[in-house]
Amino acid sequence: MRLQGKTTIVTGAGSGFGEGIAKTFAREGANVVVNDLNGPGAERVASEIALAGGRAIAVQGDVTKREDWQTLFDAAIEDFGSVQVVVNNAGTTHRNKPVLEVTEAEFDRVYAVNVKSIYWSVEQFVAYFRQQGGGAFINIASTAGVRPRPGLVWYNGSKAAVIIASKALAVELGPDRIRVNCINPVMGETGLLSEFMGMEDTPANRQKFLATIPLGRLSTPQDIANAALYLASDDAEFITGVSLEVDGGRCV
Image (cartoon, rainbow, N blue to C red; front, side, top):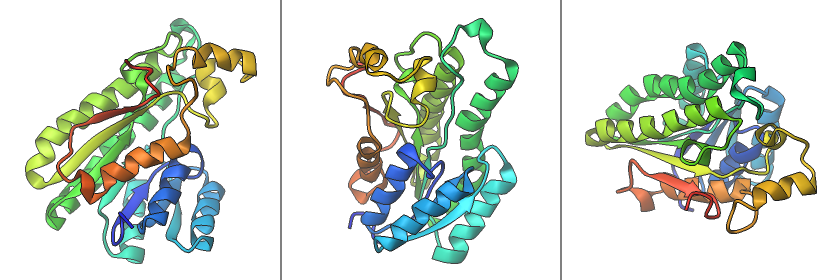
């Protein structure tokens, strides 16, 4: 039980990587606040955690909105009394396509969900973590911020912003015993896969992308959850400012 006694907030936890993180954290003893824009998805994940013997609540909310972060915080404190870890997992992308075809609305949405959400999480939790004597942020970025693929220019840029912001936050907040780390998944088996590929997810199309990953497969929610579990645990108490590629060798 590596997270026994810890309360964690996981955004975008109604499916995909976030679901994997939430369920893994719960199995390791954490109280989990399951957040998602999709309320029924969050409710499903929280219910499945409870049925498996864990402790979780679902909180529907939009991570781009300041008031929804306040709601997340209030729900966590009301049900569990404290918060030790915030996992900023919620993310989105524009479809893989030429840069001049990306609309302003798509650009704004990608940066609001992928970058501004972390701004709001910091605004909401840094003062609280300082009062508590420490805490941890885990930000889910992407290998796209390290080795960008064509057709995803503004998505790549948003994830690069997450990576450098995480490192800068780690330096600034380190004296407060607030750790900030980043995980960079390679393309994964999630609902956004066809958007990243920019084409239908067929075996032939998928093989084009698998050929760029030395270990020969996509990432899974459990791969990302295993990395997040380490960074959230006391085993990583001296780890901050890390940008950890979980990518089967894609970034080598």
